[in-house]
Length: 177
Image 1 (cartoon, rainbow, N blue to C red):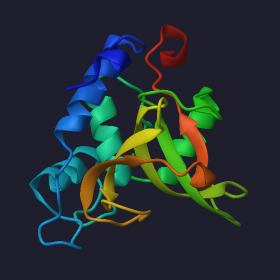
Image 2: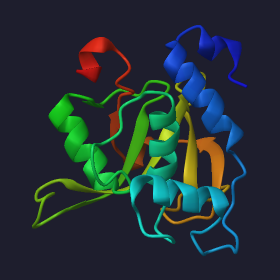
Image 3: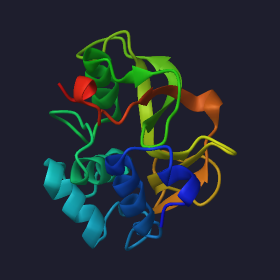
């Protein structure tokens, strides 16, 4: 359940999204290292991604879509697509807020294709809180440290040095247009 201090500062949609995302903490790959489990496979099917795909963006997409928050119109399982479309929609931000997607990078740039010139987005999670500590709920992660291909949904602190941008929830009328 979402702490009362957070419910007081977020929209009802964001509160419901974060509540739901919290219930998924502990979803774990079976077997470990397979990128598979009943919930994970369902998220792959929901967004048309092959079974066994990296699933961090699928977890974030599922919980945000379920509660009416913005998700990319295509390739939801691709972190780079989140950045590209968020920038086009004015939803990419340099400031975190609860319910935003935290997009992590390795600071290399794409040299060709659809994302040419864009920093490589390698992982994504959902911002749970900004104060008193910056925390996220992330899928395809590990219980400690950073991994872009872990095996569980976990709540952790966010390393700001790896952040490319924050993708705002898009739950306001101006952002949803």
